[in-house]
Length: 310
Image (cartoon, rainbow, N blue to C red; front, side):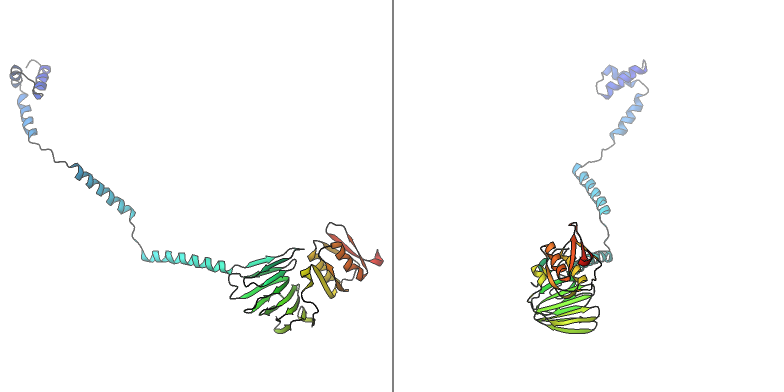
């Protein structure tokens, strides 16, 4: 052949089946022609493998799903599962016990009074600066409450009803009575039914129309009543031979004031009453029977004086 360029052109025409007889003679005359003929014969014996698109797609998809499931599927541990369930029930049970053990607290501030009903429809009137605590959820099984201060009870008939104070325990089945419990002073007045008072391993039965006063570990008074209900329910505090100190303490509960005294014997005895509606009137009702005078600066400070020292 003349040169490599001419040979390449003839080879291309031959491969494209676009070569003339004259050109084919020129190509066959070249030394490279025999080599290409062997390559063409060998390549013609190759077979392209069959390819099914659908089958191959399904195969690939199944392979992916198997690998995915291997990652997501975890072996279950029966003991671990049981412990988890037990833990959930333990939490739920603890929550139930906690909720049922919660105490309901009713309290009053200075110069405040509240009336409310217990779950059994027992009625309580709570005097100023007093607190009552009870378990509302367990009330039907245990009619028991804690009290500090003073309250009037109208108890519905039923199981034993107990009022626990630091000074003692007052118990009834169904009755009307008043309990005063402050600073080691326990006073119980029974207006209807029968009341029992337990203190220092002593049990005293108090019928309607009687009152009992306990100071510390000693019974101070056990006498009859001449009233149908406590006077403080009607916004009046009444006293029978009480110390002036006790009267002042009650005055400070019913009014937002602080009382001081100037050269006065606070153990002087007082019998009488004062109103919860008018401070100046209350001060006169206390001071005049005791021959005292008072000064009220209307800023919450009140001073008692003996008249001869003015």
